[in-house]
Amino acid sequence: MLTLDDFDFDLPPELIAQTALADRAASRLLVPRVQGMQTVLEDRVFRELPDLLRPNDLLVFNDSRVLHARLFGQKATGGQVEVMVERPVGDHEVLAMIRASKSPKPGMRIRLMDAFDVEVTGRAGANGEFFQLRFPGDATAVDYIERYGKLPLPPYIGHAADAGDETRYQTVYARELGSVAAPTAGLHFDEALFTALDAKGVRRAFVTLHVGAGTFQPVREHDLSKHKMHRECYSIPQDTIDAISATRAAGGRVICVGTTALRALESAAQQAELKAGSAETGIFIMPGYTFRVADALITNFHLPKSTLLMLVSALAGRETIRSTYAHAIANNYRFFSYGDAMFLEKSVEKA
Image 1: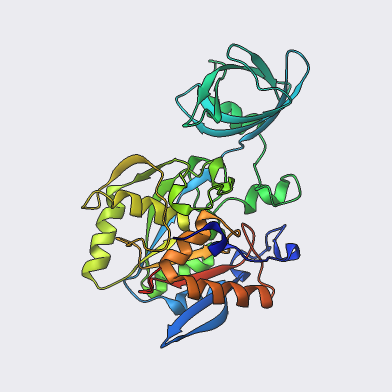
Image 2: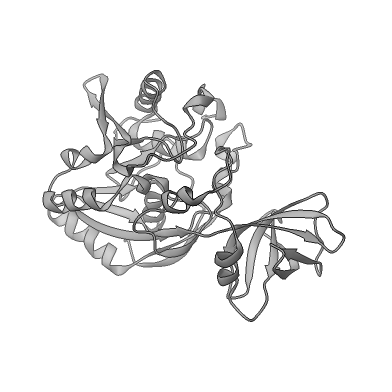
């Protein structure tokens, strides 16, 4: 039985990156390679990624764009509130988390950003963890959020979003609005790197998975078999299905850029043949999982005891991840959203 303690490690707080590098592709890239009974670790720079890839490999990106999902306001009683939008559910309604001294009741109105009112219409989610809010009808909820909201940086970044974050906490290819957190593995890519990948014969495809606030929620079950994942919406176009088929036919690898792209593809592959379409996923990938689509993964370093650490352990092997993280800490790699990255290949190691 796997437990939460199997995925714990000590991380010096000074290794949690607080700002992004000015040069996206200047991040470090750690590459573990299993040779016999040993893991050999290569320290590289992210712009050297084309050296690790082959013609006909396919990179699959998540093109979700981060909403300005954090809004501040007050109740009619004067009590202060903070709203974190989880996702739009129609043109004028959203699901959101609300931080307040007392939980607002259905029918209550909240003034946000000293600019407009929203109405609390009820609760939603498996455990009622979200509030359903109705925005004014003269524009869409997303219009209001983008005009008045603040960029929601992760809780481990200790400053409010500034002008630099507005650019660097979005990927250069982000286009589909809907996430409350960036698909951060993609933050390392810039146009010069795409030009180099094109020259190498590496192909690109896209999925959309809107990252929810649940991605930052801690795992509370010691026995991991009891953990229930948060749910997120994803969409896979037919062009991406066709690109994966062509990659397989040409002997190339499907390499996911980020855990969100991987979760979208693996979710869609649960029902036999991989097909285009949109759905909601709560897939929980941990050691012992059989991967159906992903051959490799580009990803940042993840939090202790997180489901994402469990995911990368499932792909690369628990021992490989242990040695990779130990090397990263000893060599002062930068961790989490604005940190450095790894290139992980699928392992045959079992849980």
